[in-house]
Image (cartoon, rainbow, N blue to C red; front, side, top):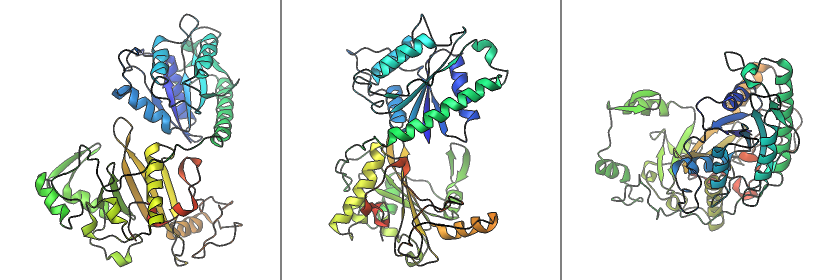
Length: 416
């Protein structure tokens, strides 16, 4: 599960930030937690709508995609901080990421009672029209005497307190599982697969379906190549090194952007007939409608479903196993949403690989074996999850089931 934690204070020094950071570190095997700040969120003023500002959009997108939210609230004058209240105002004005979202409240304060009064007020706010969060009832975690509660490394010193916090988090995980059954995916809007909505990085001077798009587009933007260096987030590589790195991946990789333009695939020199997802150089730059032009009209809806599901934030990934593969192949496709710095949808990163060698290696290395499961699916593979190792479990991201038709390799960026 992926949770986000909201620091309910805009102060540089905050025990509630320390509490969330402790939860993130200490309980990382239970869930993934990303800690979010509200320091840059402007004061709420409905006459000066800031719904489209970076800090508000960032929080909206992060909360919208999370399985659950943990809010750590201080207590100021028996209530929440103005900064937290203002943030919740923005997130219930034109944007509503908390709607039907499971929320857990925790808090740390200097005094014995923790943040009991602030938590009561926060529950009322989260239940208000426009917010409509599912706040876990009871299950209160109140950390009093916060100055003495943490050691020099930011860890809670009292083992009993840590155990109780773990119990509260376990309850929240169960609660998220229950609430997820009530979640209704957002309606899938029609996707423009013809690239008619250029984005900042769209090269409009060259027709996307031009078979020489790569060379012509590269010339338009003076794209670097060869031994020219590219500075990455955590690396400095030449273009040649990047190509070698990507081509050495034991996967077939593709990227289609926010405008539904097919921009990249690795292993371009490989024989398309030997690929699990056949691709040819002339497809680079193509409209997604062109990449999938050979599909029946009904199957094109699968493409729209995958893109729309990821764009909406209903799921962060969609995984499928292609039926009809030979027994030595488990043709696995993972469609992963990518995001801009503000957290909004930026396109799809598709990974295609044969899962069978990985599964065989894992079972041989660990001495485990597949047991149980339902009747074999097409291609001879059981469709049930493996109770002994979990290695054959291949569900959809976010816990939502895809339409039956979407379990098909043609539902993403690849053309077969």
